[in-house]
Image (cartoon, rainbow, N blue to C red; front, side, top):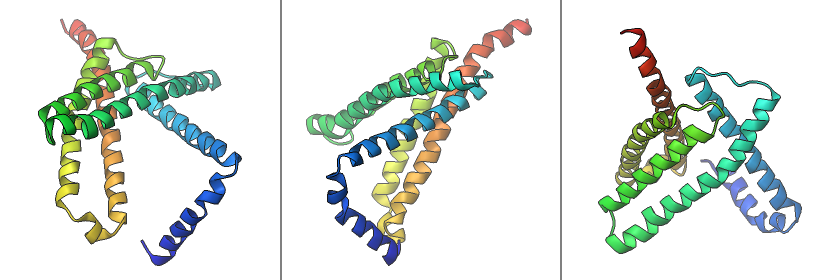
Length: 203
């Protein structure tokens, strides 16, 4: 990463205690990350609406999407606590590592999470059945890709090849693939509702 960049990171960590002692620092941090989170989910919601052939513009639509994004934060936190707690702490302790039950729990919880994402992030979602089938497909890809990423990190000396930047590279690739999986599942959810109409017009 370079000595200059590492020096800046080291200096930032050394001054972290001083900065966090100020009362305004936590408020600024929470405001920044909450704003970034809402904007990111608004972008995702706009992508869903475009895939589904629905339009949602204007300041009122933006406010509604922001409120939905803020409320969806609780769903996201619950999903992360469930996955991290069960997949990395509870299940390995009780059943050991690489248990099929851990994969089943991850898949089931991811299906529920994606179904809620497709159904409630926007005000014009597909049907519940469409969201369910889209979540099934997206969760299947998610679990499979997660296994491949875990296998790659476990078998490839990323740190020795690229230094600390190797983990950042893997993170960027994972975020890109995850976004593609989420939108692919959204496309399946929207397509499910269009199939009956297609069949009707061709009979």
